[in-house]
Image 1 (cartoon, one colour):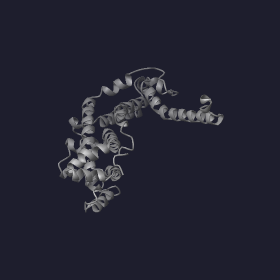
Image 2 (image 1 turned 90 degrees about the vertical axis):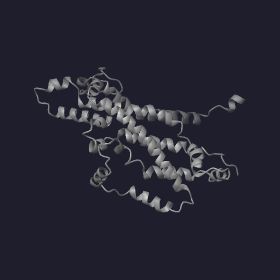
Image 3 (image 1 turned 135 degrees about the vertical axis):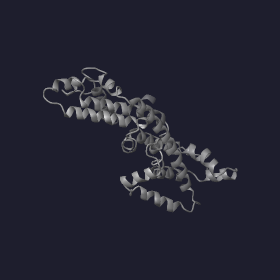
Image 4 (image 1 turned 180 degrees about the vertical axis):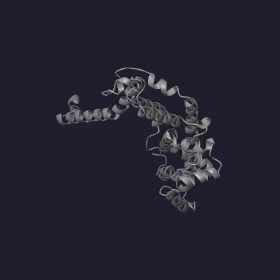
Length: 299
């Protein structure tokens, strides 16, 4: 009797089959591009130009990655990219969260003016030439801090964090004040622990942005080998590969085909750039949850 009560009807069973089939198709569509890129990156160049590679390489090789990591400056660029990502993410989180906390306080009189000023920066920019002149006047060109200071405060990140803080019960701050806590203690001991989900999200945004950005190196530190980044070095590898493939004539075609095709290099570079972010993401995923303050304040 009890077992029959939990038996699924034909309609429920059909819906489950449809749901699992749809989710499987979505998973395949989502996962296939990455598997295809991975397969091409491990495939021999002469075989890659034939096409028809899907999720498994036809002719397995590590030559593409050996070619990439044989370039000088790649290890230094990897070190600078890691340092830039860690520093930029940490300082960006600190500055954005502190400014968001200030703007979330109802007693802060200049909150409307500063919020309007920040919003304007999202729609208007001085342009590349004024930005270059400003960086030159600030003596940031040719330094590591050119990667960190200009983008340390993002209006978009500030508004996201402030919106999350506005949803927190204000009674938590009032009770902490009654217990003698100052603003810094309220921010550090109460607000930040409750903001872990939004901080993890912003941290991922900042880390991906810092890790993938190469144009700043090209614009300001292109002649500073000790300040090069991984993405800038990989961009130079890809550029040289494309230029080399474009200058192939009939006599050199066989030799060029026996080396490495630009398609193989592109896919190998994509994997090299993507894997570090994929490794970091699982550590932040557990914070992508809601309801952190559910039941924190009783009526």
